[in-house]
Structures are given as structure tokens and as C-alpha cells.
Length: 328
Image (cartoon, rainbow, N blue to C red; front, side, top):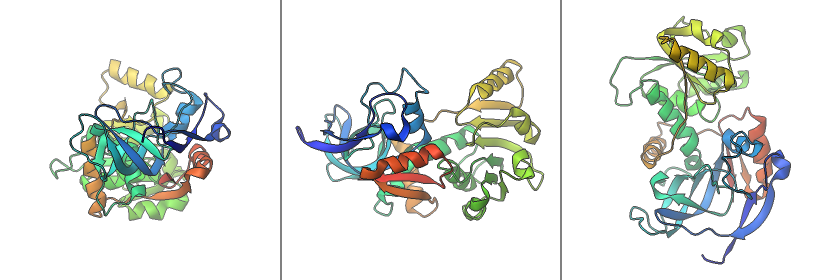
């Protein structure tokens, strides 16, 4: 592939939103040691993508400009780097790319073999691309909440906020697979969807009960999977069990302060920032669940790479039902 050009979408600096995205032609990257080159078939966006552009991790990410964003892809292996033995050309795979170097909004990208997994034929490229960040986060955060996927352990009461979003809709289903009682919050238009995904109780987050996060059956939560914009600790605290904890996916300054205070005071009720990592074995586990029909990936919309700006704008706007996908 040396010397070949590919279409891609990139930006040259921090800020600018959708208007700063450029459609370009750049050289196809070469896989290094332990890497594979993929012909991209689908890319899923995450809020983290536009937040990096906004500069929330400046100056650490991106590692350099210009930058091709997006990290969650599905595609076909077209070249194998040195030291890779578990993949071959022609394999259909799912991969989570390095968040600092990105590369997903392009016709080709390079992925590390250890964050790549085979994609079963029964799982579409679009479904597969939605699994790395959102799926691995939902799976990992539930394990951190104490849920077990082997059927062992007592039933736990779980609250999932923003349950119709990219992480939330997967967390609801995975929590049910782990034998949890699930209460969920979402917008009024998605109440039926979230019920159909298995939630035992669903609240409109704008209703008085939803805003107060109160379980309709009066249950106290052993864990809250906090996928929504910031919610004050004072709202969470009365709804938690004696040793309940809030696992926050995007903790702001207030959440980090609460985390510190609860840690210092050795409180039984805790707020815990959660940062996910993607591993090949997690992707394989999730892909198998999708193959078996036990995990459903909800896709809000699909856009061609030539109209990636529309997908980017939708991601920034928020309130997508499920995931946003870009296809070459």
C-alpha cells in the first residue's frame, strides 16, 4: 500500500467544531510491529472525539496535528505488521484505535492487534464499530459495580442514567444479562425503546421522579452507572443503598471533589470516576453476544465519509439514540 492515497477527514488545531473538519487525501498508513492495516468499513463516533477537538485534554491529545479523529472501527485486514500471528489478510475485524493518534475517519487505518477482535459474519460492520469504546465501557463499568456475568452472586439494583445513549443502551442490556434489577432514565421519546432493551423501570429524566432518580418500586441502588450530564451528589445520595456507589463516566470538577471527600472521610457511599480501556478479549466477548442476539446495538444514524460533518454535528448536539456511524 506504500505510496497509495486515501480519503480522510482531519482538523488542523483545537476548536472550530464541524466547520474545522477538512476532507483530504493523505497517504495510507503503514502497520508497524504488532499492528494491522484495516480497510475501514464503518466508524462509530463518541463524545470523546469532539471533546478532544475542543481541547479538554490539551496539550496531551491529540499527539500531533493535523489529526484524523475517531477510534472505533470495523473493517478488513489488508496488511499485517511484524509479529502479528493471530490475524491474516481478509479477516473481518473490530478494533479500538489509540485515542491519541486516532485515524478512524478514513478509508484505511492502523490498529494494534491486541485491541482487535474477529467480527463474526452475523455482526454487521456498523454494529461491530459501535462496540469498542461504548461496549467496553458498559462492560467494564458493570464489572466495577460488582456485577458478575457467570450468574453468580446476589442480584444487585442498578440505575443507568442516559440509558438510550451509546453507553447507556448497552449497559442496560449487559446489566440484565448479569441478573441485575435495572432502573433507567432517558428522554420521553425513548421510554419504550429502553423498556424493550430489558429495563425493569424506566423514568423520563425531565419528570419530577426522573429528576430525583427515585426508583418507582422504592429500591435503593447498589450502583449508579452515570452516563448523563453532571448530576449533584445530593440527588444521588438518598437513592443509594448503604454501600452504594456512583460510577461516573465523565466526571467534572464537582464529581472529582465529591470523590476526594468520600475517599478521605471513608464514606460507605462513594462516587468513583471510571475510565475504560479497550481489550481484544472484551471486544470478542461483546461481538459474541451480538452474534447470539443477546445484545442489540442501536444505531441512531449513518453518514458517508463524504458527509462526516453531519455525523460530527449530531455527536456534538447530543441526544442521539444509540450510536452514530460513518461509512466510507
